[in-house]
Image 1 (cartoon, rainbow, N blue to C red):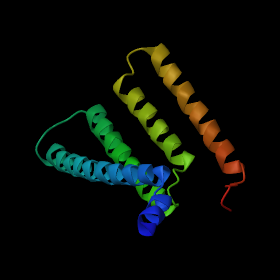
Image 2: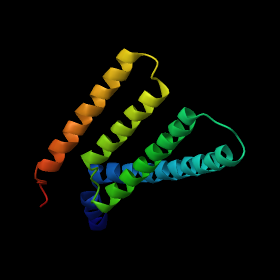
Image 3: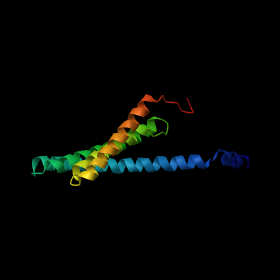
Image 4: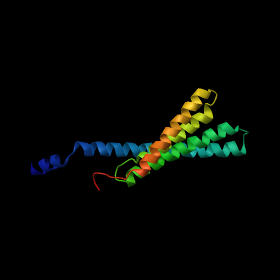
Length: 138
């Protein structure tokens, strides 16, 4: 009976949620690694077998980097004691906006708005790098 009480006291709902999150992120990383491998195979096919446009090739490269950045962010999450660094979200946002400019550059107003978003993300990145890192656990 005492063992059951001790076990229940040690059980923590946040700990359970953390374990579910960790398992989900590992599953997501496996999927992203698979998709990254598919992109590499596609690059090889595009390079050696098909004639493709420069825009399509650049789009695929940026998709490759998006996968790569998400995987890097997951790795960093585990290395930094379950913390996502904000700069990785900014990297992903900047890369995604550049991809949108390359893919959808037919409307000048949209392109200008995308460029404005990139500028805003770059300013945020600058602010984050200039701000000292203070965490509750330090």
